[in-house]
Length: 383
Image (tube, rainbow, N blue to C red; front, side, top):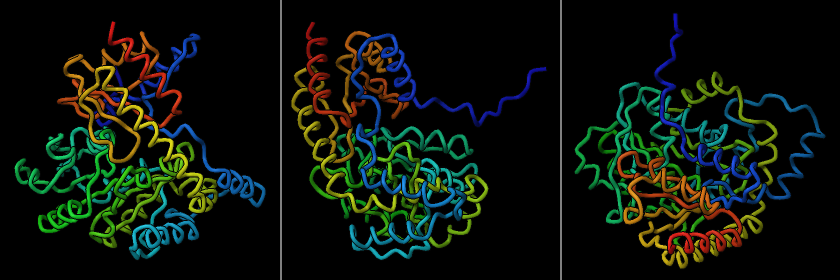
C-alpha cells in the first residue's frame, strides 16, 4: 500500500531556486553564467561581523539561547528603530528569528487560523502565498500594477470586495522594488485597524533605496507585525538571521511557537550580528553599487527590448513586462540562459496569473556583470 504524502507539502516550487540549479549545472559544464536571478548580495558580511564571529567561537561554547534571541541583540535592534525611524519600541517586542522565513512562519501561525483569508499583492514574493497555503490559510491575490505603483491600497481592497483577516505589504517590494510612502502606509494601517485586519509588513529591503527613505509600519501601528532581516542590506544571507516587531497580544504565542519550532535562532549569527549596526559605511558602499547597477540597467535594458520596467524605488530588482517578447516567461528565461548565459527569474514565480508575461532581473551583482549581461541581451534580441 502506498504511503500518504501530506497535501500541505504539495505547494508550488520557489522557481528562482530551480533557475539557480540550472545556472549551477551550466557552470559545472564549463559554461559561464551571469547571475541576475538570485536576490542575494554578491558581497559577504562586513569584516567586523566576521571578527565578532571568530571572537565568539574562541570565547565559549555555542549553545542555545532564549527562543526570542539574546538580550543584547534585541536591545540593539530596538535602538535601531529609535536611531533610524525615531520610533520607541520596547525590546520586549523584538523577536530574533531564523531568517525572515522563520519570522513569516511564526507570524502566520500566531496571527491566522486555517481557513483565514490573507491579501497580498500580485506580483509579490512567492513564499508568502506558498507558506500560507501550506498552513491552510487562503492567500487572496490583489491585482496591482503600474497604475497603483505596484502596491495595494485601501481603494484596491475595497474594490476587490474580499473579506480579509490579514494583509501582507512589502516596501520595498520583491519583485518590483516599489515602495509605500508614509501617507500610503498610514492609510493602509488605519484601514486594517478599522476592518479588523492584521497587517504584516515585510521590511527586509529597508536600507536599499534610491530616493525616498523607507518608512516602517512600526511607526503607524502597534497592531502590525513587522518583519526584517540581516540578509539584504546587512549582506548576511547565509547566516539565517532576521527579526520581528511583534504586537503585545501576539508575543506569548510567538514565543511558544518559536520554542517548539526552532528552540532558538542561530547563536553564532546572533553574536556576530551585534557588530553589523556599526558597519554603515561599508554597507552603504554596497548600496551605492546597487544604485550604479540600477542606473546602468535602466539605460541599457530598454535598448535590448525591455521597455516596460517597474519603478525599482528600492531593493535590487527590475521587473519587466515581456508580453511583446514572449507569452511564456519560463521558456523565455530557460532559452535566455541557454543561449546567452544570463540567468533571470520568470514572472510566474511572483504572479501565477499574469507572470507568464513578465520576468525579474536582480542587480545585486557586480557592475561589470550587469554591463556584460545587458550587452549580451541586446545582441541576442537584435538577431
